[in-house]
Amino acid sequence: MECTASNIQIRNTNSGKTNSTKTSSDQINNEKQPYISHQIDVNGHIDYSDDEHAIWQTLLEGQAKQIPNRACSEYLIGLDKLNLPTTQIPQLYDIDAVLQDATGWQTAAVPALISFGKFFKLLANKRFPVATFIRRSEDINYIEEPDIFHEIVGHCPLLTHPAFAAFNETYGKLGLNASKEERMCLARLYWFTIEFGLVGQSGDQRKASRRIYGGGILSSPSETIYALSDEPQHQPECREFDLLDVLRTPYRIDQIQPIYYAIDHLDTLFDIVDSDIMSMVKKALSLGLFEPTYPTKNA
Image 1 (cartoon, rainbow, N blue to C red):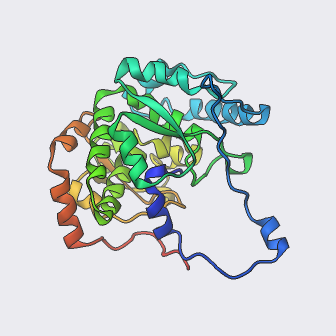
Image 2 (cartoon, rainbow, N blue to C red):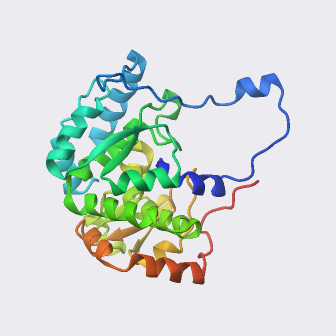
Image 3 (cartoon, helix red, strand yellow):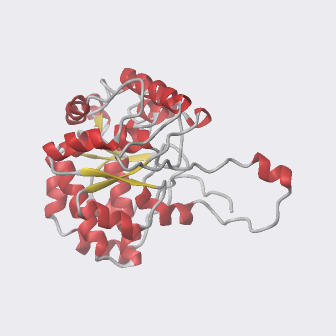
């Protein structure tokens, strides 16, 4: 499961308290090393190692087996348009050429996590943030940080679709003028749509027609399978999309999601854009959050 830069403040809220006590050198050596983004040269090119290209190939080949029967048709069309290389990490200028032709969007190279303000500003200007590092082999199925596979394979195919592109642009513009509390609320909207959204009617009787459009699912090998699982002991809850409910639903970034919200079809994102989102944000803030459906993480 992945998250994007838009959730940095939510990440800090949901991940428990930071232990400020001193640690021994052995403890430090055993801690996971942070990911470091690559720099773009003057020609817009990024050099990746052979090992990093191999991770890309492994991820892409694995998802190629899972995505066709689980992703929505609009995503698959966009993926074909991108024509991603299978043996090496693509360059962002190649992605930009496709996005600009389709919807006028382009990518923006960023570190793994950026502030809410920068994230909203990029989206408002039709620039989608992409972290220029790829996960390690030990994180192949699960990563909290938004790596380049998450951004390119998870999100960029649907940035060729007008409804998805319009939603992201509007979301960015709303966030620029929102208060800190409103931004926290808006993060839940993004989480349950762009990151972990399903398309197709909710309810068990409609499960066969349900598909994935959320990039957090489509870039996670384990969650791609889980989100549409038929196994009795491992079925997530799928709820009909309701804007107010979505804005009041808490989530954790460090586990597979117990709840998904399903929109009827991808063009429903146009309907959300045309609604009075900020009015509903204010109402959600006044009503407060629903009780979590997941275990509380220990501090």
